[in-house]
Image 1: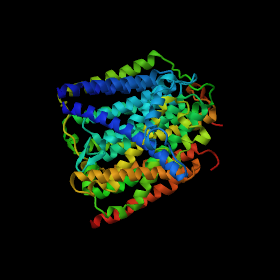
Image 2 (image 1 turned 60 degrees about the horizontal axis):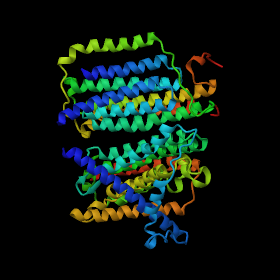
Image 3 (image 1 turned 180 degrees about the vertical axis):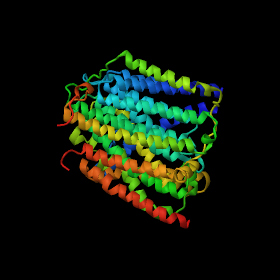
Image 4 (image 1 turned 90 degrees about the horizontal axis):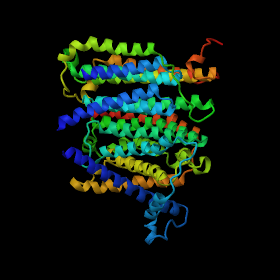
Length: 167
Length: 316
Length: 102
């Protein structure tokens, strides 16, 4: 019974993520779009938990939902403030060409990875936080330092771009 | 099977705990505030005014459920739950006896820091969907304040994690030593101030200031919906006090065995009461003072604490 | 195989959003959807395929954390640009932002 519930959870997560993504792309209301993005990101964290990566799931929630989503909401509130009513509508220019591109990419990647379906096993065991630390401060140290430098550069860039002309 | 049933039982217990802590917290707040202001608090309903909070709760439940006309009704109604649920989830990983927690996660401390930060979303959404400018401004200020103070809070907890060598709260409690208190003193102060600011309480309550923004982001919420915001504030106070008492002060190990929970609850009560005391003693900070404190005072102090711990750790 | 289809579907939905949405912030949100889809695809593949490269303990989580950091930095800079552009051009719609310079 445990395994069936886990399998159902996977499909619930997949449905949630797809629902969130569709809301982001098709919703006319800006706040519904932001909430759809939030649901999508939480569903992704659920996927990481399913694959037994609790650290990554928590970091996803912390940084993406608690950070990036809040940033996007702030952006919405700051940009749409100049418009008349409180909840302006979002619009899209639906065209079949874009839909063809999107479906085409789906078909392409799926067909490329199709031969791998025999090699895929189900849910191997997880490693601990100590292994992550050993890796990030050991073999992946240049990557770690580069990520830190990237964050610093992004911070300075944001201050310069959004800071105005009085500097 | 015990997983699902145990989860439901703990959910109910946790919900009741938060509701009780809100009642005790609001009663304590009104009595302590009265003491500080040299007057009596509630004293008519029941002996010493003890029935005041149940009476207030009943009144709130019976109030008319108003939704403003220009509000986005569906989102307006679910926004309080966006604030309440993450804070309630944060209570799950706190160790309540030496060696036992409701959710004994190997990354429990990161969970406690990450999940309650989702309530920022609820505040933003509540302010925005109320449909009036003051609520929106209150929501943005509240959100900016909360995400700013997450940084010193996380850094100060990181110092204890380095000392314990694990992100698991049960491990940290078992590795606690008495000399961690003087060693982590700066970290404890930073955590305390950051927690008060995180909850939009005390001298940091600009987003909900009665005299300026008429209760800010939850101005348009009536009756029990306002009650849910209050429950998240006092539930957050409970969570922050429990976490501080367990991880920073190590009160779970002051008495051996299962008696540790007595000192644990006493320590939680002391920290919670001091938060109430601080609120009614200090004047409210201006928004720019608030931001300056977070970025220019508390974050460098937390980093200094990290340096101190980092220097001492090789000698342990 | 399910994870490949689902993750690529998420990526495609995000791609459609980038191509069709008129509002700048909606485009940014769609880019985040694309990033999320690609990240889940990477992690799912790494966790279900038995190769020597994926056997490294803690490797998947480390790379995943680095991806999240990258996405956060990109979102922050993109939002700063969006806000500055929307302020300067007094609009937030992509098809009204046709001038460069000045």
